[in-house]
Each structure stands twice: as structure tokens, then as C-alpha cells.
Amino acid sequence: MLKDKDFVYIDYIGKVKDTGEVFDTTIEEEAKKANIYNKETKYAPKLVILGEHNVIQGLEEALYQMNPGEEKEIEIPPEKAYGPRDNTKVKTISLGELRRQGINPYPNMVVRLSNGSLAVVKSVSGGRVILDLNHPLAGKTLVYKVKVVKVLENESDKIKALIERWLGSSYVDKLNMELDEKKNVKFTLPKELYLVEDIQIRKYMLAKDIINYVLPESTVTYIENYNKEVFSQ
Image (cartoon, rainbow, N blue to C red; front, side, top):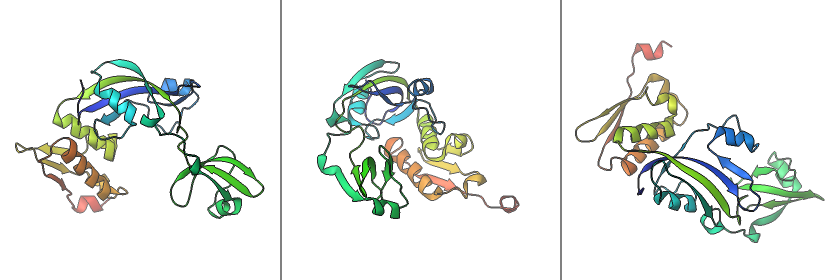
């Protein structure tokens, strides 16, 4: 059985129980079949770190009961998915207010409001817009077909998975990593990372995840070397 802090890669197909509608999948072929394919999405097994709570509760709980290579279908009630529907989250707002935010709403449109929250436009009529701030899957029982593709065992592989998470797959081999006998981690950054947007936040989150989930007693060090070659391009 799997346990806290295990690094698990899963493939899944998520459906709404009542309608059979596929709303999410890690499998490109299934996304195309369900007409939810997005060319911007990378279709590949998803990394789940158990205990991180980065997937819905019912799915994470089921993973604890599975083994590498195992596949099963699980049913997840609303209280362990996206919660019950809350009618107090259905709001009426003026059309002019949305237009001032640069939004021209239409039914079923998903909008991001000025406070950062997402809402679904239910109707537009008479200068008023009805917005539903519930998650689109709130109140729905979900069915997941999930497979544990692999479980990472060694520390280096886990750190590489975290590099991919925070810096992208192209940097897994470019980021020179040294792991000493005291389990301290040292990275030498390639120069193409120096000016990447939010690089300080990404470095911080990478170090945080290494300490939280892989090597709790380690020190993570980043080295950046500046010389004339760096500035000549």
C-alpha cells in the first residue's frame, strides 16, 4: 500500500456519474474522444505526492489503498470532491460592472472576477447577469478510472520530478545537481534560467518541496556563475 510522501504517477479519466461526461483526463486519446482536448495541455501521467492534498480528497484517499500497477474505478461523493452546491454563491450583478472589468458575458461563460474568483455565467438579461460562484462540479458525484503508473523510490528521481514541476521538463538534465553524503543538495543553474520569470519563487518552492517531501534535514544551495560568456549573448 502507498503512504504519506510517496511520489506517485497516475493516469486517470474523470467522469460525472449522472451524465457520463468526461471532464478531465491525463490521456490524450481519451481527451480527444470526449471532445475536451486542449493543445496547450501536456497529456502525461500526473505526479501526486500523497499527503500534499493537491488532488481531491476522495481520489487521494483511494490512492493510499492502491499498489504500483494497480487500476481501479472509484466513486467519489460531492463531500469528498468539490463539495455540495451552495445557493448563496449564486449572485446577481449588473452587466455594466462586468463590462467595466473588460468582460462581455454570455451564458455558460467562465469569468474571472476582479477579486480573483471564478464564476459561471448562468444568464444575461435586462442589464443583469446571474453568476454562479460554485465550482462547476459542486454537488456532483464523480467516477474516476485511475491507474498507478509508477511510484518513485530513490531520492534523486524524486528531486528530478520536483525540478520538472517547478522549472519544466527541459531543465531536468540541464540543472546540474550534486547530492553529498550528508544529503545536502547543490544546484548549478544554467545561464538560460537566470532571467526566467518568477525564478526566485520557483527556486524557493523547489527547495521547500525537497525539504518537505524528500530530504527534511538537507540544505538546498543554488549556484549562479557570472562571467563574460553570460553577458556576451
